[in-house]
Image 1 (tube, helix red, strand yellow):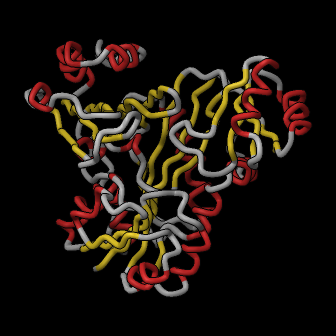
Image 2: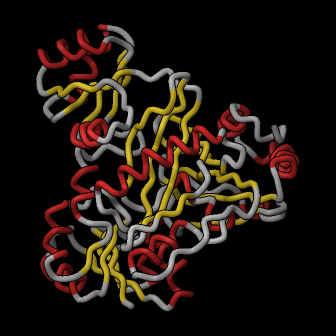
Length: 376
């Protein structure tokens, strides 16, 4: 079966790595000639609406995406010619933060207070309604912390407006949370849903830095997250992997946003689960039986940003798997990750205590926010 992927970044690359053993072959469309997935299939370089590339992808048996902001109209056009999964409507729902929040609210999934902002008076009215602190966000094309400004006082309003004004915006109320987490599930075309364990996530400046499989997550939290994600999957008639990012608060979970594609927070599943999110996404997209989402042990994933650390220093770490995305270094760019898998939390804690000398100060500080090193 021939799978076309819109986007040629690391998610597409990891899909192709997972799909090869299944006998799948791949074509990619990406605006960049050096897209890192290109080495694993046929790369078509062009804009999302490039006519020639569109014709080439339309010849594929299935179409999917590694980037949630591929224009929904492009996906709808392709869906008239071949099978697009997840459905274009799922991308349309997630490409506008206001529409996304309204959808979640309609499904009785708790979200932060939100208000539409199109002008300075709108911003003042939104602050009056929601209060401070709050987060001013672009409605479209924001990811990894881009297009966001935290407002803590009225003095922050004008600088934030100068940076983001002129675009459609929303103001979200600030969430006082215990921790951030994400839940990934895969849904087949016949409606079967399988869930991975919750991922405990830690961010810096809006970018995910580490994620761990929460094997000991409170049963009530896992159940509440699964209930919310089930509603979303069924509403969208979804096929493939979808991740819902959430905040754990004293009052319960608060949904942040969803991603209609494999997600950074579940990269640990490559080694840490019986079937990775990438393989299960392709299984669903290609009408293959879903694989087990059972964890293989306790897992932690570390994102490498900007440049890869010294590989030789890391490869001797017990239970470590190294992932180089084959991307050129650039400040803030996701260039790879490493996953450590151990038999249980105690064993993982011992490994993490041993790798502390390899960590930069920032990563060490973020890891210290968890109790992983103690095995607790």
